[in-house]
Image (cartoon, rainbow, N blue to C red):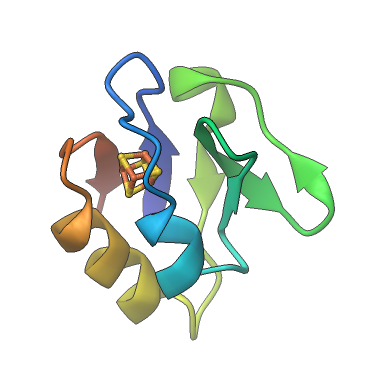
Length: 74
Ligand code: SF4
């Protein structure tokens, strides 16, 4: 499973980081996908293959995102 965020749509409530802090980083304004300590670029350039064990939390975040801007690909 892979995930990325469209930051153009992000409304900055930080819910994704709360639900899945190993995959999302919220800078207080926008959310980004992270790979460990590395914060990935905006949009599809910041796509991450989600490691096993984190998939459920990523799906929860995508579902709860009010902007529906967390994109999950099988
Ligand atoms: S849950 Fe969605 S709108 Fe909220 S910070 Fe994360 S990506 Fe942005």
